[in-house]
Amino acid sequence: MSKVNDLPPPETPPSGATSPPKPSDVTPLPPSVSNHTPSIQNLVAWAPLYLSKTDRVINHLSALLSSPSGTDRLLCTLGYTSLLTSTVATSISQRQLHTRARSIIEKAFALPANTTVIINASELKIPGSRLLVAGKRLKALNGLISDFRIFVRLWGLVGLWGWGKSVLLRIHKERNKGSPMEKDDESSDRVGTGIEAAQVLVNILYQFLENGAYLSSKGVLGWNTEKQNWAWIWSSRFWMTHVGLDFIRLAREWSKKGKDAEEQEKLIWKWRREMVVNAAYAPLTLHWSLEKGLVGDFWVGVFGSIAGLGGLREAWRVTGAGI
Image (cartoon, rainbow, N blue to C red):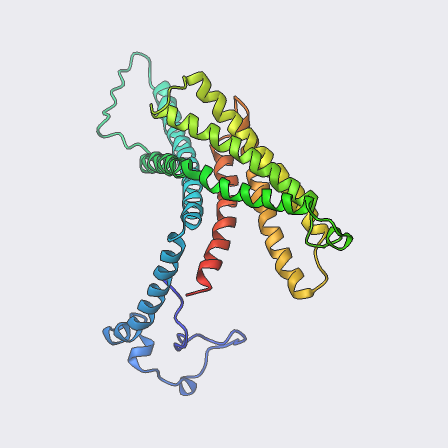
């Protein structure tokens, strides 16, 4: 529940008091204030404030979900946090089960020889069973979200067409610059354009292989399991290459930051956010690029949650600017 402003705080003793105040010094409070349980009148008076804040949050969320990128960032965060929570809950539950099983075995060994042990499964209280069920359901939610995000990315090649076209036009423009003044134009950045062109290429390869592997896994295309596994691994390797190129881009942007204080502050905030997101994705892309993987579900959830929250925070800020 949101914090309510402009309301009188409950009566509390001063922090520096060494002795309780005298009865004559205490001003009696009205019953409506001294009572910690809010009355119907107070709830009715506060309702417009709560409804206003709730309406603002829902409108903000609606604006976030109205764009494909905002929806993907929200689902990315929800999916990886679900995986992380599922892993933690399952680990705690399994630890409790192991402890209970060890306790039962130790008690059984302590019994005299030839003693018959009867365990009534219906009366046996299994610790952590709710956590185990919750972990399985959160893991299923993560799988559902992951499947949906891959399905939505099937149209990623269409977006890459526009990105590639803009890069090719810039390359064409830079090659056709004839005058010395145009060649020294600060807006011309051939190295940066080359990095971006390489990113377009590796993203096309990544998207093509992921689409083929996903559609084949659903029976739409005819790639066999071996080819699907090969496509999944190499699509992740092309994604890892994109992340590596992004690190180079960010290093060049840091070296070229301007001297204007306000502009520099905005650039640094944006630069740090993108660096954190890429640093979180880097071990994940390496993990998925290896046949046997590199880390477990816990660390996949941790790194994925960091990357998701980094992107979601920026999307939430941008969509909230017009509300």
